[in-house]
Image (tube, rainbow, N blue to C red):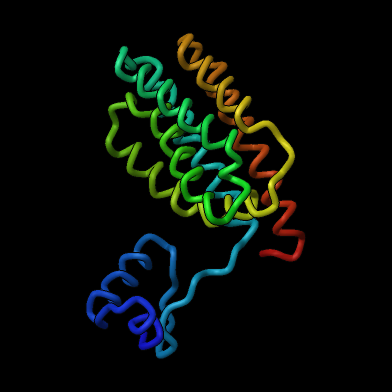
Length: 191
């Protein structure tokens, strides 16, 4: 606690509150008399998180395609444009610019499902996304050779053409490719 307090210039009370919030979201583990730590990466946990996220996001995408209006379509196209610019600049390839790319990437995925109109579904998806993010960074750090932009464009095109089955299939394939790559990076020795 002292080290974190000094590093971030924050008093113990708000730091402890932040750590307990992270604990409630399974992003840190509290150990009796040992403080807090980040949980180890686990292949089994990641597979469960990724599978559950795919189920939730697939359902949210179906609802979004069904309920989406002109504003939803405009948001989706605009978010893809931002992701495209960021990707073409290579923002995902550099630690310095990666946060910009991750923001554009998340905004695209949020735009896809924005019209789902289920606060609970969207909240659960956001929680799972935060848990998956620490694993996804492995994929970005080891930049798999694939055309992410083409994958995102195909998903967007299917959504805009209101082909829910194709959009969900492409989204699932997109996530499955990332999942396979991350599991390969975690290796056979991860729990």
